[in-house]
Image (cartoon, rainbow, N blue to C red):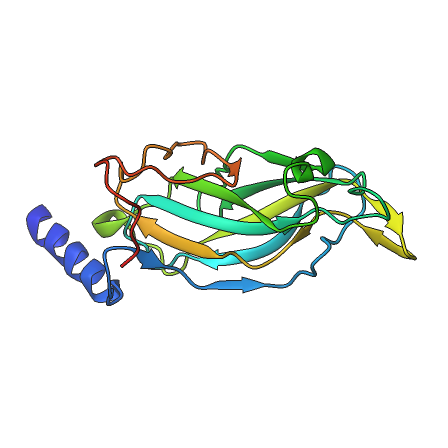
Length: 196
């Protein structure tokens, strides 16, 4: 009887499984933010947007989010935000990364990216019984600056890349998400990074 129940569970999981076009799973994203992140400085967490990961069957999430530091008349403004990803199923989150004016030093005024390679805790494959699941992109405003009649802080856009990949595809994968600025990916097989 237990074997029959297990077989039914697996068939139900296969029926929920989306049709995938490649080894890498690109995931949909919805955003409801402005270029200069909203919120007053303090401990309150805000949400940049949500990644719909329903049907994700890869244990590692790769994501790149563009950001920029607003510029004053002669230099970058003294602004700061802290960003992380949160699994909406378990509540687990990645390590936080704080962006400040110092992160603008090498490329003043230009857009840069934050990269995550998160071995996430969401269930995948036959272990996934969820009807819906997602990841939230969250942040906390640490500092704002007034310039040109506006209150500004770090600006962020929609993710440039959101994809699921097999475990141990890249050396940078980590259980804490390994967030970093402009971080490249190093394939574990020594080959170039490719997206199908």
